Amino acid sequence: MRPAVSLNAPLRIGLLALGDAPRLPLAAVHDALLAANRLLAANHYEVLDIDGAPGDARPWAALFVAARRLPEPAEAAPDALRAHLALLDPAHGVLAGLDTGSAWLALAGWMAGHRCTLRADAIDALIARWPEGVVTRNVFEIDRTRLSCAHGTAALDMIIAWLGQRHGHWIVQQLAACFGLDVLRTADDRQPCTPWPGVRLPAKVAEAVALMQANIAEPLSANHVAELVGVSRRQLERLFRQHLDALPSRWYLELRLARAQGMLRQSSQSILQIGLSCGFTSGAHFSNAYRSFFGRTPREERTPRLRPAADPDRPAVGAASIDPSVPP
Image 1 (cartoon, rainbow, N blue to C red):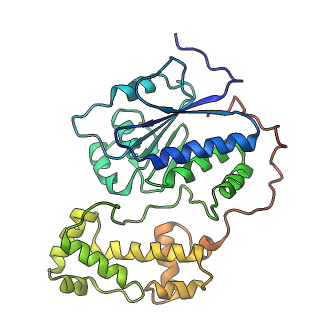
Image 2: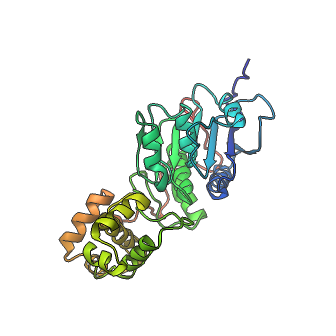
Image 3: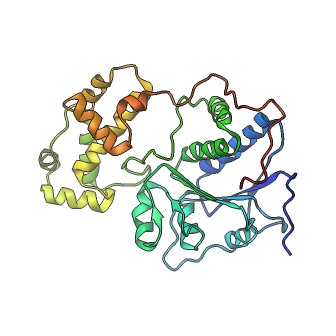
């Protein structure tokens, strides 16, 4: 019989890396949970790095699974993963996929009925193999007891948002300050369509990408890019679809919008100046394109999401506790 979970015991959080999974996402979750313990002045979260099969039969309150690649079509979930999933608290257990970890969980049947996301270059492959699922291109997803995120530091944005749901916005502010973050991405932020680091692009595609990156303020037409790299426009479109899963014009637009987003967050230039420097012909053109892609206007992007003022709902130090009626 599975041991009961004590409401007074720390919540056991397992961090599982599949194969050569990147360590950054798991490290971000680990550090954020330990920082939350310090801010809450209590050991709410017992965070354990998992290596292999379970050492005991105690249930997990949450299990975070990271992977670097998708499983092969006939590849089953590793024995260690299945063993730890069997120990997930059946009532309120939280399951999270980091990078392509959500693909392993989805294809094993653990993400059914929940939204999920993963690293941008693996999204379409998962959609093709899991047509009944709901896969988004957002930076992260928190859908009840299922969490998922893209690569890199997306795990930090996700875990801070999840802790904010549990303990209130005050802890979001404090954790952002702990990690030196002026702005946190939200679940509404989409992943830009950019080449995945380490992926070797064909010479013609790499050349086209370099041309686009070098011509942000005065964008080149697709015909001109194709001419400069020595292929037809149709050939260029075929290569971009094959290797970047986007038409050249769409990829170019998202590149310029991603550049604009960074400038809005980090520079003091006016919105019009930023729009013009990223190749948009007017403020209205920039605003409409930005809103269509990110779901908010450039002006809304500039609105501070994190304010240093104290949150009146923040509990006194040592008074915070996890409400057992709220699932972890």
